[in-house]
Image (cartoon, protein in one colour):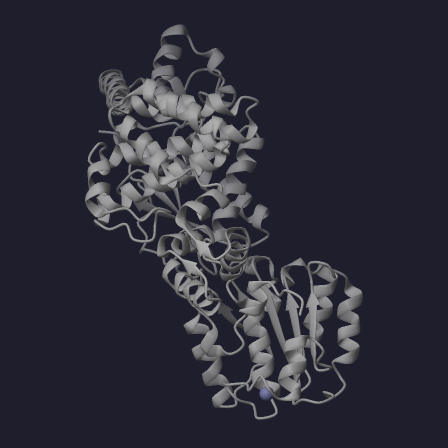
Length: 568
Ligand SMILES: [Zn+2]
């Protein structure tokens, strides 16, 4: 008999064999027991986690001659036909290769006819997210009015690409990555069944490398067995998987711990001579430091690393670095990993990263002092602004000059009306939805595109707080800026927001006690905002002294007009 790949031979054939997806098999079994069979199922999850296998088990459960049953017999003609892929009632469509509308049209034609042998006609559509829009639309028509005897089972690794209209008509099951322990258990069963000696460490290594996918794990085991005859050792697996090996990794962590740059470079030279892939080297190093990070945080490391290490050994390694350093090292290794991909000299990227890691003590302290410098700079700016503010307040109190400026003979400057405080309104219920945030960003963009720097400068101090059915809400700072916003810009912002969104919402300004957090300010207006342009106000007509005063005022308050009584 021809050789059958392990992953096919060991494909689960009933719910009890489905490893790591108990939440799915339990729910499906209950549905079958109670006779509540859905018309459409969506199985989503990473590759090799059992979606297609589950679809086939479900097909057998429904069509088994002894069924519907949660334990399909796998012996009757119906079960065997499904197992061998010859059933007239179970159709497998691979959307990745048949993206077209033709297949779905065929499907719509055949769907009407009653099943040939079994109780149900079952359509298994694999990688359903690959269907074209037209094909999805055609499928949707069938899903809207499915014939009694039809069950659709759609499997996908990317559920977010399946249209919501399809998703809403399906019962959705999310398949999880299978844990290292579960994969290990299955591999153990396989090697025992095949009478192959395999060390636990070797099997765990395969289980970790498979990254949650049972199919990958079994394929890897297949390769390893083929090349290592009857005895599967850790060294063999390490070699076959191209792993850098525990010894090298430990040596490297050792020299990094001693901040021994020369030692690290030597070890890189060694691993390159061994012909290891640098991407793999950085990947494993990253995983190893991840292990140290988790050990430091949680005190355990099981199943994280390829190499099962003793706790006290890990503890010793972890003691050479602070938690912050480890996090920084992991980031640096990630960076190096993407540099390696593009660099004509990948070796240099690795060496540079390791040298920087050797200097992590001084780097970390310079990061800290940079933050301190930034904080100092911020303090400096605030102090400057405060000084300017005090200066302007003083001028306003003594000379009452802003009104004079407003009534210059040019008449171009509008007479200032007193600033009102922000209208006190009851707190409005509003949610920050994805749509709302997008429309708000578009509104800001529209002002940016129109060069409305003054509005942008004001918006910088405001915070989008969400929308509801009839209103959208902005958080406005209390005081001068809020008053300016309400008087000068509110109507315009409301108008632009509505024209961008095509809605007709009322802008509600809500007083904020705290300034917006940086992340709430759309990125565009976090950038340097040019000084307000003063064309509208005919400033060129003012004399030098007035101009200077106005400049200072604009610097502090923005470009609106202010009545002195409101500021005292
Ligand atoms: Zn059967």
